[in-house]
Length: 454
Image 1 (cartoon, rainbow, N blue to C red):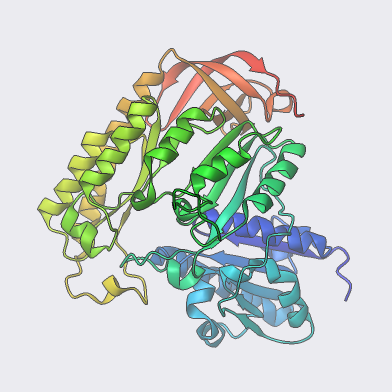
Image 2: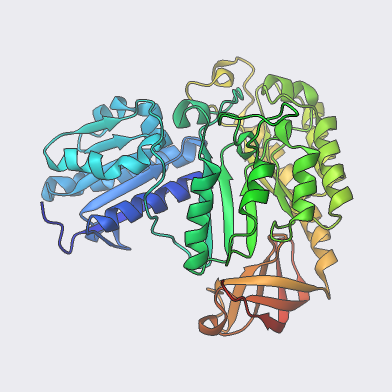
């Protein structure tokens, strides 16, 4: 089969794991001879990488799919793929709903895209949602950025939070070996990437499934050990990791982050609710007191560290008083950023069938109140940057002002300053902060730090 001048388009919904999967699948398609098309209507292969966390993301997929399914009646050669979490959850039911689909594939099958497409080109309609051992990642992703990159370190999740579909759709935890992760990071360093984010649905669980224990009886491979192991990769100047679970967040990990100069002072640790009874019903396995202790310990080691998190309001049975406990936690801790959501029942999760669901009005009122508090606190937290010298890694041009470039501080604050993107992309620049806003900063460049890759 020839694929000369054939084009593909990928639309990605949802989390960073999905973005990383999409980059890998784009790499596979380019290896097969396909070229990227910005416009889905010009593409011969269209792939939707889907998310089931929120209902509206799922609905959006169906409306996009409907449009392309119509197009397929005029262009029978069009290949339609649904990948990701909706694909995993719906499986063959998706084919009944959209018979024009060629391939339905769960997240564990991202690295098998070439084999699966070959089956499609041979005339088959394919569903790949069975659990498999994830093949070691030898794909070369088509990275969306030239400065920052994701590196998967653990797939899947063994937690059983009562609101979450992730374990059903992404499978059990499977850690990559430290050696494979380091090889990928070394390649990124050679290619000029300055920042790597280590990625896992529950990254603190890294290594639990790998063989080996230390003489003291702890797992030989932990996220902390991995950070020490990859820290000196040449060319990579910054290391981040996400997403953390409070149950596994240790003082040893915090100490490593404080000791290792390349690890950024930014922690993303979802708390979901500030009320112990709600946390218990969510099956999160910690209390709000434990969460507060983690944050206090981080601040003892790194007083300036930025803390971001996720929170859900309107969980089934949440009382006004329980919601106020969430507000209290947010006010007490002072988050730099908080991803908030009203609870949305997901098929196949225990909480979806509980009878004490809250009305949309209550959920939306609570979400609004929480968001208002979050913005107020983030604006207060931003004040500490005023007049400070911050190191910013330049990622891109400011789309709203072409005379400015933008990048992030080590604490993950988006920062704008005047400069030429062609000269500064991928550079670390010392910036004097002159304007602060709730979620971003503006400043003046003071000096550019030249980084020489070894």
